[in-house]
Length: 119
Figure 1: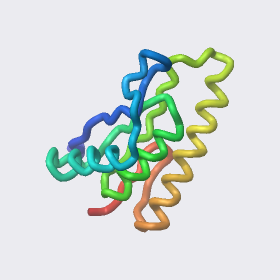
Figure 2 (figure 1 turned 30 degrees about the horizontal axis):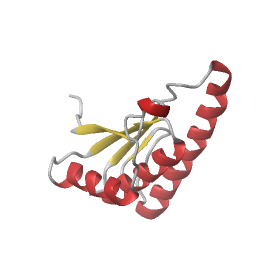
Figure 3 (figure 1 turned 45 degrees about the vertical axis):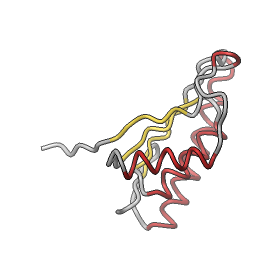
């Protein structure tokens, strides 16, 4: 038997320039939208996507504090191949920092790309 978790993807802004899927990024609005995902949609997990690591961090931190399981999913749509490895290395460090902070705060177990906060 497999365990399934109800979740949704949350886009922090994908692509760049004029094609950015989310031009305005307000941390308070992000928190409100993630609260709706948890409280009204009854999701237990959220996949945080986007190209800007700072935005990913803000949304992932807020989701974790709300109690959502977080899947940290960077999406570097416009980066040239030579910049991909440094980008993913930076994102991996950021995700690990967020995961470790959630573990210290909650005492939950996790892994390298997702973590869970007990409800």
